[in-house]
Length: 251
Ligand code: PGA
Image (cartoon, protein in one colour):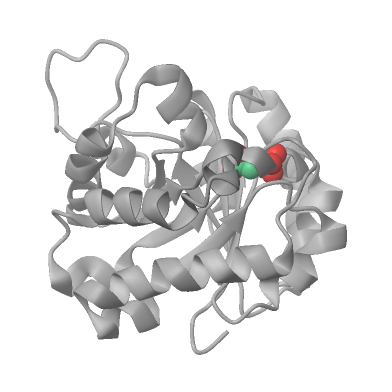
Protein backbone atom coordinates (compact mmCIF):
# COMPACT_ATOMS: atom_id res chain seq x y z
CA UNK A 1 0.00 0.00 0.00
CA UNK A 2 3.09 2.25 -0.40
CA UNK A 3 3.47 5.24 1.95
CA UNK A 4 -0.20 6.21 1.74
CA UNK A 5 -2.14 6.14 5.01
CA UNK A 6 -5.32 4.13 4.49
CA UNK A 7 -8.63 5.89 4.99
CA UNK A 8 -11.74 4.12 6.24
CA UNK A 9 -14.77 6.37 5.77
CA UNK A 10 -18.28 5.53 6.96
CA UNK A 11 -21.00 6.95 4.74
CA UNK A 12 -24.10 7.06 6.93
CA UNK A 13 -26.33 8.33 4.11
CA UNK A 14 -29.75 9.42 5.50
CA UNK A 15 -29.35 7.53 8.77
CA UNK A 16 -28.84 8.57 12.40
CA UNK A 17 -30.29 11.48 14.33
CA UNK A 18 -27.92 13.40 16.60
CA UNK A 19 -28.88 11.08 19.48
CA UNK A 20 -28.17 7.98 17.34
CA UNK A 21 -24.85 9.45 16.23
CA UNK A 22 -23.79 10.22 19.82
CA UNK A 23 -24.57 6.66 20.89
CA UNK A 24 -22.58 5.31 17.94
CA UNK A 25 -19.50 7.41 18.63
CA UNK A 26 -19.44 6.56 22.36
CA UNK A 27 -19.42 2.89 21.38
CA UNK A 28 -16.89 3.31 18.55
CA UNK A 29 -14.12 5.35 20.20
CA UNK A 30 -13.08 2.77 22.83
CA UNK A 31 -13.12 0.06 20.15
CA UNK A 32 -10.63 1.85 17.89
CA UNK A 33 -8.42 3.34 20.58
CA UNK A 34 -5.48 1.10 19.67
CA UNK A 35 -5.86 1.41 15.88
CA UNK A 36 -2.76 2.95 14.38
CA UNK A 37 -1.65 3.98 10.92
CA UNK A 38 -5.19 4.44 9.62
CA UNK A 39 -7.30 7.53 9.06
CA UNK A 40 -10.96 7.18 10.05
CA UNK A 41 -13.86 9.35 8.95
CA UNK A 42 -17.59 9.34 9.57
CA UNK A 43 -19.95 11.10 7.17
CA UNK A 44 -23.16 11.99 9.04
CA UNK A 45 -26.16 13.96 7.81
CA UNK A 46 -25.76 17.75 7.93
CA UNK A 47 -27.78 17.99 11.16
CA UNK A 48 -25.32 15.78 13.08
CA UNK A 49 -22.06 17.30 11.76
CA UNK A 50 -21.45 19.85 14.52
CA UNK A 51 -22.28 17.38 17.31
CA UNK A 52 -19.97 14.75 15.78
CA UNK A 53 -17.09 17.23 15.42
CA UNK A 54 -17.47 18.00 19.15
CA UNK A 55 -17.75 14.35 20.19
CA UNK A 56 -14.71 13.25 18.13
CA UNK A 57 -12.37 16.10 19.09
CA UNK A 58 -9.00 14.71 20.21
CA UNK A 59 -9.74 11.28 18.67
CA UNK A 60 -8.55 9.90 15.33
CA UNK A 61 -12.02 10.21 13.84
CA UNK A 62 -12.58 12.96 11.30
CA UNK A 63 -15.98 14.22 10.22
CA UNK A 64 -16.91 14.54 6.54
CA UNK A 65 -20.09 15.90 4.94
CA UNK A 66 -21.98 13.98 2.24
CA UNK A 67 -22.30 16.89 -0.20
CA UNK A 68 -21.65 20.63 -0.52
CA UNK A 69 -22.38 23.44 -2.96
CA UNK A 70 -19.40 25.01 -4.75
CA UNK A 71 -20.52 28.61 -4.14
CA UNK A 72 -19.78 30.36 -0.84
CA UNK A 73 -23.35 31.62 -0.60
CA UNK A 74 -26.31 32.42 -2.82
CA UNK A 75 -29.90 31.71 -3.76
CA UNK A 76 -29.63 27.90 -3.69
CA UNK A 77 -32.48 26.63 -1.53
CA UNK A 78 -31.68 23.47 0.37
CA UNK A 79 -27.92 23.59 -0.26
CA UNK A 80 -25.03 23.92 2.20
CA UNK A 81 -21.81 25.81 1.43
CA UNK A 82 -18.18 25.12 2.24
CA UNK A 83 -17.78 28.12 4.58
CA UNK A 84 -20.77 26.73 6.52
CA UNK A 85 -19.08 23.34 6.78
CA UNK A 86 -15.74 24.96 7.61
CA UNK A 87 -17.32 26.90 10.44
CA UNK A 88 -18.16 23.63 12.22
CA UNK A 89 -14.69 22.16 11.46
CA UNK A 90 -15.73 19.55 8.93
CA UNK A 91 -12.61 17.85 7.47
CA UNK A 92 -13.85 16.60 4.12
CA UNK A 93 -16.77 16.13 1.76
CA UNK A 94 -18.06 13.16 -0.24
CA UNK A 95 -18.78 14.31 -3.79
CA UNK A 96 -20.72 12.66 -6.59
CA UNK A 97 -21.93 9.59 -4.72
CA UNK A 98 -23.91 7.44 -7.17
CA UNK A 99 -27.09 8.03 -5.14
CA UNK A 100 -26.67 11.79 -5.60
CA UNK A 101 -26.01 11.29 -9.29
CA UNK A 102 -29.00 8.98 -9.73
CA UNK A 103 -31.66 10.54 -7.46
CA UNK A 104 -30.64 14.21 -7.28
CA UNK A 105 -29.24 14.95 -10.71
CA UNK A 106 -25.63 15.54 -9.64
CA UNK A 107 -23.62 16.12 -12.81
CA UNK A 108 -19.95 15.81 -13.73
CA UNK A 109 -20.11 19.50 -14.59
CA UNK A 110 -21.22 20.48 -11.08
CA UNK A 111 -18.60 18.15 -9.60
CA UNK A 112 -15.86 19.82 -11.64
CA UNK A 113 -16.68 23.04 -9.74
CA UNK A 114 -17.02 21.34 -6.37
CA UNK A 115 -13.62 19.57 -6.30
CA UNK A 116 -11.42 22.70 -6.49
CA UNK A 117 -13.78 24.56 -4.12
CA UNK A 118 -13.43 21.85 -1.45
CA UNK A 119 -9.62 21.87 -1.79
CA UNK A 120 -9.57 25.67 -1.67
CA UNK A 121 -11.57 25.48 1.57
CA UNK A 122 -8.83 23.27 3.05
CA UNK A 123 -10.97 20.11 3.11
CA UNK A 124 -10.53 16.67 1.60
CA UNK A 125 -12.77 15.88 -1.38
CA UNK A 126 -13.82 12.24 -1.87
CA UNK A 127 -14.87 11.92 -5.51
CA UNK A 128 -17.07 8.85 -6.09
CA UNK A 129 -17.00 7.08 -9.44
CA UNK A 130 -18.20 3.73 -10.70
CA UNK A 131 -19.98 1.79 -13.42
CA UNK A 132 -23.43 0.23 -13.56
CA UNK A 133 -23.86 -3.49 -14.05
CA UNK A 134 -24.79 -2.95 -17.72
CA UNK A 135 -21.71 -0.85 -18.29
CA UNK A 136 -19.52 -3.59 -16.80
CA UNK A 137 -21.25 -6.31 -18.85
CA UNK A 138 -20.78 -4.25 -22.01
CA UNK A 139 -17.06 -3.72 -21.37
CA UNK A 140 -17.63 -0.01 -20.71
CA UNK A 141 -16.12 0.16 -17.21
CA UNK A 142 -12.90 1.93 -18.21
CA UNK A 143 -14.68 4.37 -20.49
CA UNK A 144 -17.05 5.34 -17.65
CA UNK A 145 -14.27 5.68 -15.08
CA UNK A 146 -12.09 7.70 -17.47
CA UNK A 147 -14.97 10.07 -18.15
CA UNK A 148 -15.93 10.55 -14.48
CA UNK A 149 -12.37 10.94 -13.21
CA UNK A 150 -11.22 13.29 -15.96
CA UNK A 151 -14.35 15.47 -15.72
CA UNK A 152 -14.30 15.56 -11.91
CA UNK A 153 -10.62 16.51 -11.71
CA UNK A 154 -10.61 18.82 -14.74
CA UNK A 155 -10.38 22.07 -12.76
CA UNK A 156 -8.18 20.81 -9.91
CA UNK A 157 -4.76 22.50 -10.14
CA UNK A 158 -1.92 20.02 -10.61
CA UNK A 159 -0.26 20.93 -7.29
CA UNK A 160 -3.47 20.04 -5.41
CA UNK A 161 -4.26 16.79 -7.23
CA UNK A 162 -2.39 14.62 -4.73
CA UNK A 163 -4.76 15.68 -1.93
CA UNK A 164 -7.84 14.29 -3.65
CA UNK A 165 -9.43 10.99 -2.55
CA UNK A 166 -11.21 8.95 -5.22
CA UNK A 167 -13.67 6.23 -4.24
CA UNK A 168 -14.27 3.48 -6.78
CA UNK A 169 -17.81 2.28 -6.11
CA UNK A 170 -19.27 -0.09 -8.69
CA UNK A 171 -22.99 0.73 -8.57
CA UNK A 172 -23.95 -2.95 -8.74
CA UNK A 173 -22.08 -3.54 -5.47
CA UNK A 174 -23.60 -0.69 -3.43
CA UNK A 175 -26.00 -1.90 -0.78
CA UNK A 176 -26.48 -5.18 -2.63
CA UNK A 177 -24.21 -7.45 -0.62
CA UNK A 178 -22.52 -8.27 -3.93
CA UNK A 179 -18.95 -7.17 -3.39
CA UNK A 180 -16.50 -6.79 -6.29
CA UNK A 181 -13.79 -9.42 -6.25
CA UNK A 182 -10.43 -8.22 -4.99
CA UNK A 183 -9.13 -8.56 -8.58
CA UNK A 184 -11.96 -6.46 -10.05
CA UNK A 185 -11.52 -3.80 -7.36
CA UNK A 186 -7.73 -3.71 -7.74
CA UNK A 187 -7.98 -3.50 -11.53
CA UNK A 188 -10.36 -0.53 -11.40
CA UNK A 189 -8.45 1.27 -8.62
CA UNK A 190 -5.17 0.77 -10.50
CA UNK A 191 -6.81 2.15 -13.63
CA UNK A 192 -8.00 5.22 -11.67
CA UNK A 193 -4.47 5.79 -10.35
CA UNK A 194 -3.14 5.56 -13.91
CA UNK A 195 -5.68 8.21 -14.96
CA UNK A 196 -4.32 10.52 -12.25
CA UNK A 197 -0.79 9.74 -13.45
CA UNK A 198 -1.88 11.02 -16.84
CA UNK A 199 -2.15 14.44 -15.17
CA UNK A 200 0.74 14.12 -12.70
CA UNK A 201 2.84 11.09 -11.81
CA UNK A 202 3.73 12.65 -8.44
CA UNK A 203 0.03 13.10 -7.58
CA UNK A 204 -0.70 9.50 -8.58
CA UNK A 205 1.70 8.35 -5.84
CA UNK A 206 -0.10 10.26 -3.09
CA UNK A 207 -3.73 10.20 -4.24
CA UNK A 208 -5.76 7.76 -2.14
CA UNK A 209 -8.07 5.44 -4.04
CA UNK A 210 -10.77 3.76 -1.94
CA UNK A 211 -13.02 0.85 -2.77
CA UNK A 212 -16.71 1.03 -1.82
CA UNK A 213 -19.62 -1.36 -2.29
CA UNK A 214 -20.70 -3.95 0.30
CA UNK A 215 -17.47 -3.72 2.31
CA UNK A 216 -17.90 -5.87 5.42
CA UNK A 217 -15.56 -7.10 8.18
CA UNK A 218 -15.34 -10.45 6.33
CA UNK A 219 -14.09 -9.05 3.01
CA UNK A 220 -12.23 -5.91 4.14
CA UNK A 221 -8.77 -7.38 4.69
CA UNK A 222 -8.56 -8.93 1.23
CA UNK A 223 -9.76 -5.76 -0.51
CA UNK A 224 -7.49 -3.52 1.56
CA UNK A 225 -4.54 -5.80 0.83
CA UNK A 226 -4.55 -4.82 -2.86
CA UNK A 227 -1.71 -2.61 -4.08
CA UNK A 228 -3.87 0.26 -5.34
CA UNK A 229 -6.63 0.17 -2.71
CA UNK A 230 -5.90 2.74 0.00
CA UNK A 231 -9.01 2.33 2.09
CA UNK A 232 -12.76 1.88 1.95
CA UNK A 233 -15.95 3.90 1.73
CA UNK A 234 -18.37 1.89 3.82
CA UNK A 235 -22.15 2.27 3.82
CA UNK A 236 -24.27 -0.33 5.63
CA UNK A 237 -21.43 -1.78 7.73
CA UNK A 238 -20.53 1.71 9.04
CA UNK A 239 -23.86 2.02 10.86
CA UNK A 240 -22.90 -0.39 13.66
CA UNK A 241 -19.86 0.36 15.84
CA UNK A 242 -18.86 -3.34 15.96
CA UNK A 243 -18.67 -3.84 12.20
CA UNK A 244 -17.14 -0.43 11.50
CA UNK A 245 -14.44 -1.03 14.15
CA UNK A 246 -13.72 -4.46 12.64
CA UNK A 247 -13.15 -2.89 9.21
CA UNK A 248 -10.86 -0.26 10.77
CA UNK A 249 -8.93 -3.07 12.46
CA UNK A 250 -8.55 -4.82 9.09
CA UNK A 251 -6.87 -1.71 7.70
P1 PGA B 1 -22.61 -0.15 1.06
O1 PGA B 1 -22.56 1.38 0.55
O2 PGA B 1 -21.33 -0.37 1.84
O3 PGA B 1 -23.82 -0.24 1.92
O4 PGA B 1 -22.65 -1.01 -0.15
C1 PGA B 1 -21.37 1.95 0.09
C2 PGA B 1 -21.61 3.38 -0.34
O5 PGA B 1 -22.68 3.67 -0.88
O6 PGA B 1 -20.73 4.25 -0.16
